[in-house]
Image (cartoon, rainbow, N blue to C red; front, side):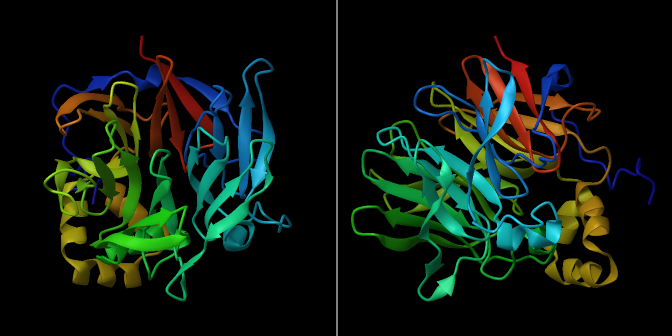
Length: 349
């Protein structure tokens, strides 16, 4: 198929602003690649980001440079090799606990971990559930008040290296989970999810959002109120959502890995087709099929009720592509991507 084929190309989004090409690009530390999540510490330091070789880096604003802050595995040999990420660790979602200053980490292979405010080697917190290792720990959010951590396990079958297969195969084994810091108990809040991904707690802590990447939607799980323990669809999206991050006003920024073309939606809704294509094509070819057309950045802002407030894009993919997180901090958007060697910074106001 030609790239301009309408089957491969996702539709444009009404009201979208093509402005992210104006983002300032901050190169990661030499050799670092794939910043997935962005977080600032309780004192406003950072940002911090996890990269593909298992390190967590910290940006020193005054020196305009990155330093190594933490690692999730003591194994540091040959960690730049992609086939070593299950040994060296792959930190994805990051969140600070504001009371303790500890950084909590969702490592795709090594589970839920934390490290103190001075960094170093992280300490494992949750690595298995009911005797089975977590296969693909992805993102987390912390309720400081209730002392619980909400996190996702993307799949019980596929690991992070197989993320394309997890999407195309129609896998629905993802889980939204809860870790109680007081009792150290882990429970499943929602199962049967299609590529469970980003997690975000609402400002009033009455509900929790979780991204279902393959289903191109965000679910809302009620923690309090008359609907407690139930869930509904918070937003249906024009592409594949990754992390969700709340801003100071209680609105939610969602990063789309890519917009979904008609072909991608057809493949994902027909698991037999996805599995057939996985046998025929390699993962790179499959990824190209799913994200077809011109890869570029799409950031979506949603209201507390799930309404579409704003869409920002880099339509030509000049600076930003395949974004994994959009984090609003002090009037700027910090934009991360698992497939780039830099962070984007876009001035909102």
